[in-house]
Image (cartoon, rainbow, N blue to C red; front, side, top):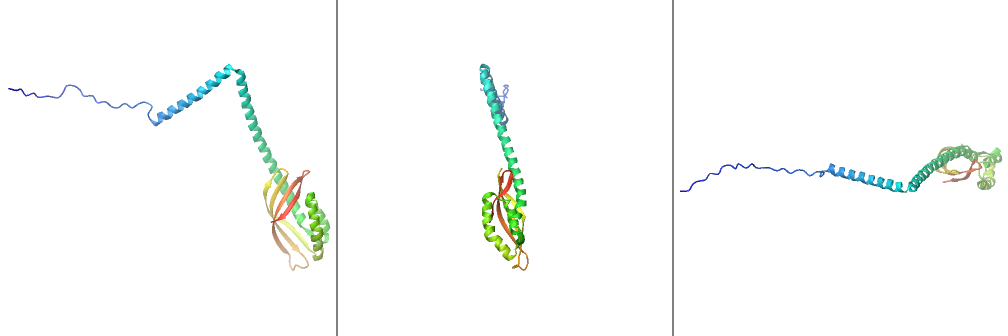
Length: 213
């Protein structure tokens, strides 16, 4: 006669294991590891420098002198750039003021005093440009002004600096010129654009060229 065996629940306890996260696997941990590695690299570099310089004091002195030289060169370069900028800005202002006074004198005249007006205008010009001015006014402008009893008055309507250097400034001028004469029933106003080149000559700003465009 066989015995039936009833198996009951086991007395052995069942153990459930949960995976334990591995340390230093998250993004923050990776960043921290990189930061620590960087600090170690910098620290090792400084340790190396201290070790070498400690063994060789002259090398430390040389490195320090080289650093001071680099700083001095950088400071001098910045100072020179600032000085050059200030000089160019000063030249721009001085040349602009000289042009405001000179251009109306050069382009304005009265037929009754034409030669005095041209002589006054000549004082605003450099030597080379004064020679060209004499040829133009002596052969064309003065005879026509006297014959037509022409008076003309010029004024600068607007100006803009194109190029500025310590001894040379180029400006774009917008000039209005009012002309009267026996052959003109009423005053005529003409507008023109001129390229003006001012040059410093013995601390005086003179017109080196005046060209219509």
